[in-house]
Image (cartoon, rainbow, N blue to C red; front, side, top):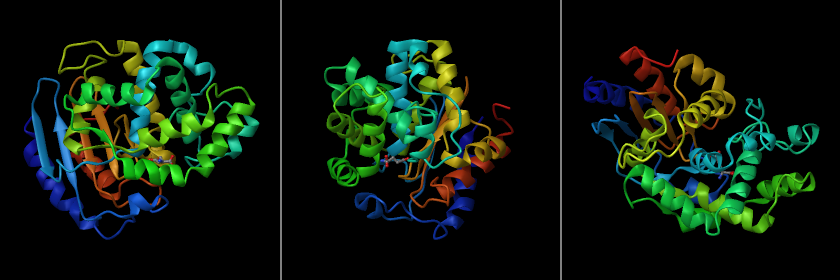
Length: 304
Ligand code: GLU
């Protein structure tokens, strides 16, 4: 299928949404961005790519990084991980503390902040140099070295990390965080600050479309079952409190971040990433969500 026509048509339609959302401003370094940017990139496992708009501008992937840390940890720990973090939608904001008390320090899923902190804690236990290991992993999946930690964003995250620190200490009191909290928050703030272009982000998600094999190198990164399981968690929990609606309107596993990025994929067929910094009321890219709804409608294909 020639996706060029489809994505350039939708690109023009969803540009109309500029001015109707709001860029994330709870971290100063994120507020400071030109909101009128939109990039769309589609990649296929056989090496074809289709692009429209600002696809080469690096942006902060934020929570999309949670998919990469989960992949790195799950491939080592296997099913054991699910004893420390659940895999159910939370129905609460991404940085909520309330559920954790009732559920004895076991976060609902790896994509809310509490769950991501547990996963990053395990990453620290597994790798002597976790930040280096993570950036190498993302570079390997995207097939480029143009992926980096944005130090300004990382510092801004760190300066505003009180709630994430609270989540980490609270879980530590239940024995569910094993490492020093300062170290954990440092690695977590760095993972959120990963900057890459929308084209590279789409390429990095090909591993899921390709059922666990990195198509650039032919190396198996995840077992087929692990890739399926990560996709299942993306499909049920990947879009904050809009996850059900994303499944309903779009029907693809994916993950969003407050930097305005969304990455998703269709098993066996393609990966796709969109970036546009203005967010809707759920914290997902406004133009991004609108793009995805039109995209799966136009190509008449989804996982359902
Ligand atoms: N850096 C963010 C935080 O933990 C992650 C935000 C996101 O994209 O959900 O506050």
